[in-house]
Length: 164
Image (cartoon, rainbow, N blue to C red; front, side, top):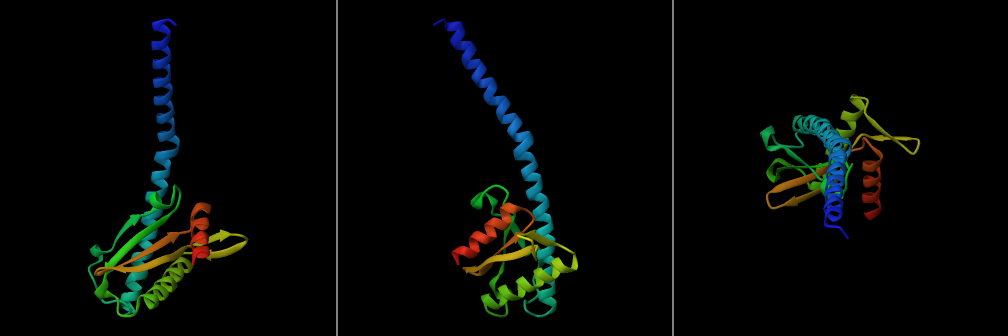
């Protein structure tokens, strides 16, 4: 085989790989990140509002809102899952963790109703936001909230229900 032909094949493969990655980034990765960032902003607003209501109802003690941070957990569960982890200082929660979960779920459901946000799946309306997990680690209470904005997230929540 001719050395020039081998060099052309290698250059062609490298160029094809580069073009594929560029197209994948432009049409898949970047829009996916934008959708995730938008969903995270919407979920953050819902959680902050719901947490504020819980403070007003004295379910939670007042705390610095800058302490409430979110992280996406899509990398763990797969692309397209709009679920986010939040955490609070453990001493802000007055009741037990199950009671906190129930109160937060109700508050998030109320937020969704007030903003006309519902997930439509299987010919039924579901709350747009669902608390999928709550746990305590050291002095922090962590909780996951899913924003049921797409089929992937709805399937993720349904899978979690099957595991419990």
